[in-house]
Image 1: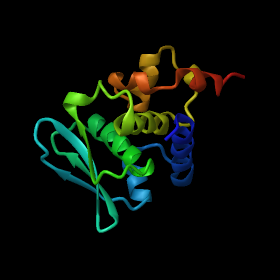
Image 2: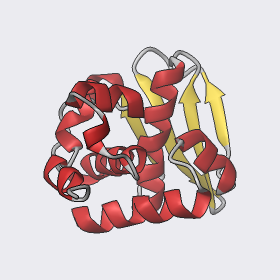
Image 3: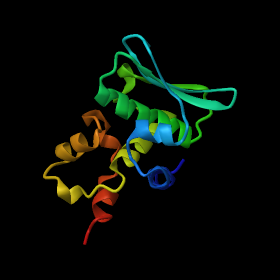
Image 4: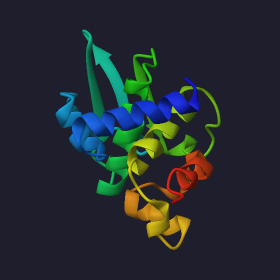
Length: 152
């Protein structure tokens, strides 16, 4: 999926649900969120069972990790990735630069940054923290377009 289409889809989701909070989006879109002990490495996964999508978050995650993990898994859902079980693993967070995992990360940051004015923050780090985006995901932020969208 092209980056611009991912950004547009993230915006559509935020607009239709009235929120950029991934957990609340699941609620609004009737995507069940379950919690289970997924071990030390797996943070979350997206699956489809009998045509019903679901997201499973690890009980070992912090609230902060739950939010971005859910956003990542929503990326798999809305980008229509066909793998039945896409998972976010603590070991591969920094390494995805292409393919389904990178697209899910791009969707996550576009979703969580939708409607944010970057000029309201002094640093990129402040912006990321305020929006619930982990520092490892900064490389997925389209800084050029984010800033140009708000040039007055």
